[in-house]
Length: 360
Image: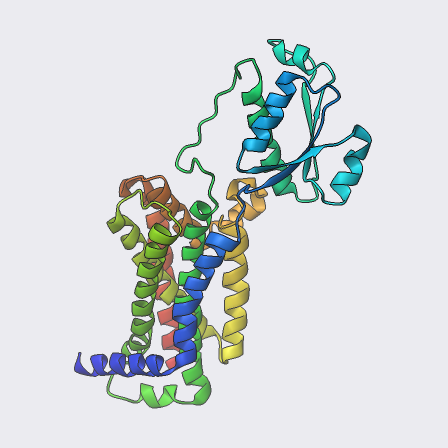
């Protein structure tokens, strides 16, 4: 254990002296969390609305005032009906609310056969159009004299904040980047420079040498885990509804899986550029596109849903969302944990076997 500890100390000092590596490992997670938490948002913060009202009755004025006083809407004024296309094309408004000429009569009907208000949206941005249309519809429904027959409740994320969705996804992506990408490049760099052979002839067993190179990145990832959880809780106001111990336990398992994946990549690649390409193609794109980080897995075609099952980040993100956002107990994520554990074992066994084969 003395020699093993010395190798860990050597690798740790080597990483600490490499300022570029430290910058990437410790600063990039903070930058990504800040970008996805604050800058990149799918929330509706402001909707520019113009109004077409042939007859500005008291009920129409009340409905317009309700929109204008809403902090997420900006009233752009009344326009004639023949100006709708021009206003939308020039970006002077994102939506136009067209009140029917007999709005009072239609709004007073218990089951109107025609709409009292028509919402016309600029749908060049489909996400904004769909979300904004639903939001404006809820405002106008509340302004109606008739009680709405539909009551909507939003659980776990009532403010519809995008940070609730992005934080688990960013955690899944960051840990793969730090553990798998950095460790694979580190080991391949030793092989490319010819220093791995020098290390392998030392009295320490080869696998202990490799593990000694992985331990510092595991420790750095633990620091990143603590940083991300603190940013999520105190900067982004994402609640840690579930057990902190369960969140940390699942995350540590995912870190070990990522380390094993990085070791597997290092046994395949002979040059650093090859390791980077493999990591970028096999890790980054599937994580972003198929893990559920940005797009729901349920909305994908059946073929892509099947492929997503082999993406480790999918199961980690699902588990973290259940623990962190929904506040479920550890027993609720037993399936995801078993899948991650099985993947970890497979990666370790395959990478060790291929590593030993190369030594022979």
